[in-house]
Image (cartoon, rainbow, N blue to C red; front, side):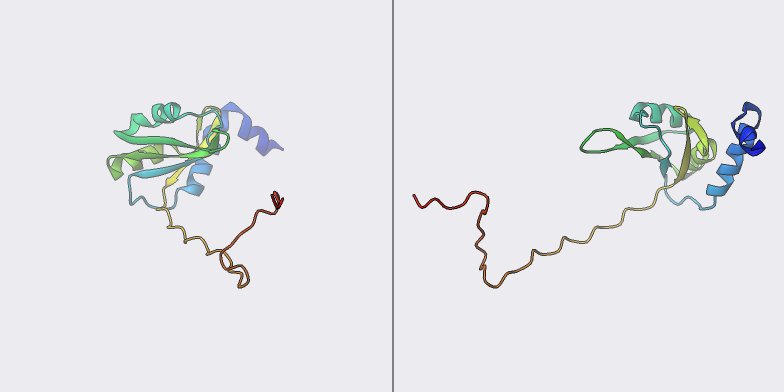
Length: 140
């Protein structure tokens, strides 16, 4: 119980942040693109840009949103011109607060190509003709 009191008290929040940052800070950067997780649902592209522009020249700051609702999915990407700027941003912003939430900054992994969709099943009796069973046939 005392551990949780220490975590949420203002005096030891830096200890908690340093413990979190050391846990997630084990991989090296090879590209200037960073993955930012733990974002608030209300964090916008502009807020993300303002938080990260102090570390170097930003190429892009993008919060990923849901297509259907337009709300944030809770993560985003930040790209810099150089790997050194990205490393500074990673060190400076990992396990810090942004819009009231603790964010984590990790190297972005390259996107994996998606496999092509499987072909539709072939019915040997259908011969490519389909019918709409909801409308029916009236014969007129």
